[in-house]
Image (cartoon, rainbow, N blue to C red; front, side, top):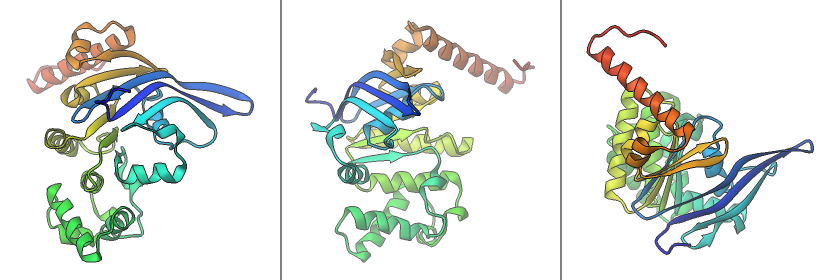
Length: 278
């Protein structure tokens, strides 16, 4: 493993077993990410990109067989038990998922859920937890943080819940941040605001980041390097600008051409030109 890598994934395979049948969902994927670096993983639904992240962190059930090597700061993740992985996921590794509403219990106030997370991973007092919770909400530019602590998840927008989730995860100062389609389930205005937060996080922290998305535009904005996945394979890898200009794989070229077509149509619509549906 490179001494500079926070995460090093080597020949990762994921096979699903059911009723004496098997399907290989991730096929020999390898990549690494260094401190302060953002790796983008691009692919459509079913490409294996989210499956790769779940396999690394022990989030798959026993129907899935995971093979290969995954090193986090020199430690083998695939050799750790469930409790050790859970402790890592709550502190040194954080995940930001695509549906923020699913990450909060609808029966409990935001403040109580933030407190529960801090109680599990720190030795802070109740007063320190409350102070830190307010600091986190302010850092994420959420207005009236004390009022937000008293709210239930359904009383908040998806974009605001996503901000709370990001702030909560970052408060524990993780070494690795994994973002799995974090802007998919929120409106366009909130998407822009959340991407600005991720860009700010990237420039102000030394944590490594993995950003998983089907959106080439989003990944070209934030990624230092890209891996393109298709049907469980890493079909292309390199710098975003190099892939954008000189993609060799037909699937990657198709994604790029589709993105350029959408952007061209959008630009014509903005200029007031007539746009025909494809």
